[in-house]
Length: 203
Image (cartoon, rainbow, N blue to C red; front, side, top):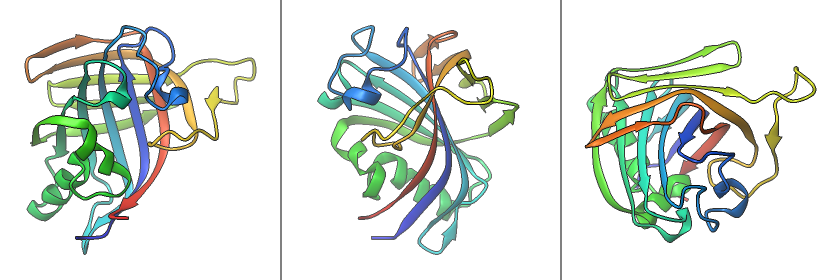
């Protein structure tokens, strides 16, 4: 099995009305609406799958969970940067479906139906504190950290056991539209997260 690593940034926007309880409950507490629907974007600053460089590529995700995250039965899809070579497309498909094990290996346990991994034009942009993800016409998202008393510091949850990363910036969605795989979602104003990631596998 190929060794892999990804360093970069992840953003996520879900249907929770307040900050996602999954972060501190590690998926044991029900989402605020009783179920979880989410889109996510990953900007890969540095990475590899075997001998193939992943740096500079972006990935989008769509996740549909019927109850508490930890109970599984997820449905998920991955959108892979259309600039990826055939080899990097295959590698990223394995990473984000859980087949490559390691940090994202939990997907192979929790996802009961992996809908697809497909190529798409993806942009991941930073504008000030805002992060914007565009996956063709399928995901149109923008998130921004919430404000605290010190405008120079993000409001964060730190030292967690959350699978994505231990330090999560609490954010809110300015735009969160999904039109894919029969889903028509709009999460404007809902919970969002920003996380610096350092993932690897297969161990």
